Image (tube, rainbow, N blue to C red; front, side):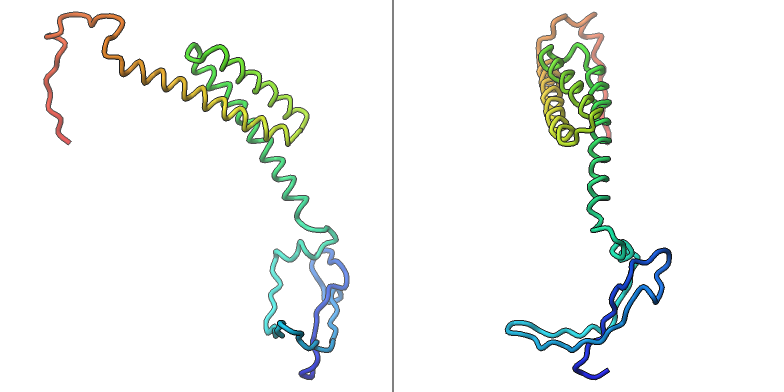
Length: 173
């Protein structure tokens, strides 16, 4: 091969099974002169990696697989959130306002419906809305618990003699 010739290895046909020499074509072409602002690069070594196997098929790309994976993840996340939300509402029974509970239950029902219909855009939107509703519920419950804990005057007086209820102890780390 002369200095002014370029050797190219082209994909002649899509391999079935293991790639064979007959799936490729070796051609020599003239090396083009670089234009203004361009450079000429010489490739000495070329790697053919397993990743490239997907590129040697008649499919356009991995986009279809990526999109399907995203849909599966969206559906799994939505389903998991439905379960966690129902469990959280059950655990906080009596501590959540009726309005907050009704909103969360409504969003859970809508999300279940979106899962059943495989409406991925609606699943993403409702997942965000339900997470926000649950954070609002959590904030309200913790704020109420914090207010109850900081109340210096409990609703009922302590039982027994206050002298007998005191235990003197030393804390040693």
